[in-house]
Length: 179
Image (cartoon, rainbow, N blue to C red; front, side):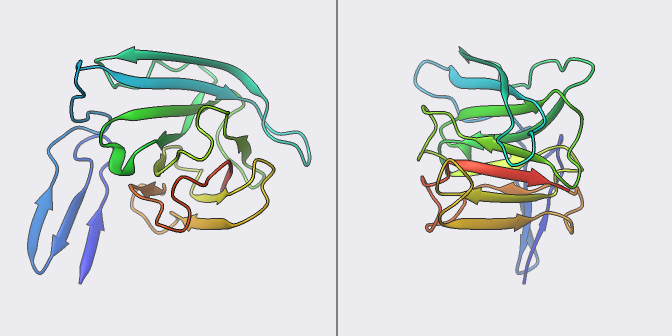
């Protein structure tokens, strides 16, 4: 029997297999070093989607850093999700998506993957406890092959996907995240 425990800010993942506990002592957001000790990080801020439209991108900033911590949030921002270019974010390459219009609700956010990340996503997490349902789509307009992930039964009420699976790996080009 396989049981998982997700602790969002302490251990990144603990797994029980055959009665033995395996845990990563690496804090969430920390990652194995790359050659120069820096990782690629992009911070993208989106607004609420108008009916039938994608969420507008308010801003996007990309940089290289040795500190993988999330940036300080503005008063009205919520960290919705992180995308990982590589399974389990190894080696690290992250885009963090923030919302400037509050947490997820039943309409949620509709996010189009920007050009430099299209067909490159291998894993992701959601962070806002209200964004507990996610669908990833193969096309930029929320059409084509898709996969649904449900985090409502996770202790964190979030979705934690180190690897999206062979079917959707490097194929996600748009998202819908909602409660």
